[in-house]
Length: 81
Image (cartoon, rainbow, N blue to C red; front, top):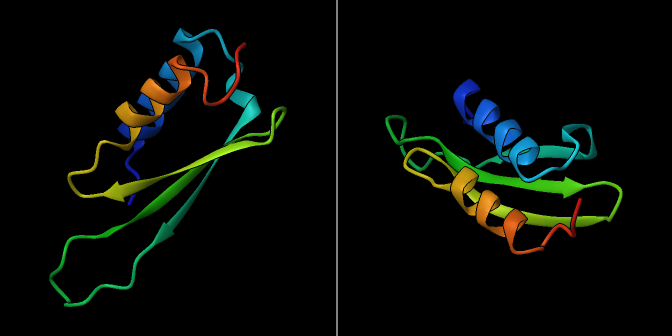
């Protein structure tokens, strides 16, 4: 559900904003498919461990969770570096 390129973009956003990538964890949760050929969807929860700040984003096909995370990171939802 989460691609390698999304993980790379996630790490890059953290570094670009001046945070330590080791301070963040991802917890994906895949939804049960309604039909066998349905696109995979779910959520991903991002936790900044040192601030115990967490936000859950919609993930999967067509999601913008990385961009949403980067916006939240820059406006201080996860604190500051």
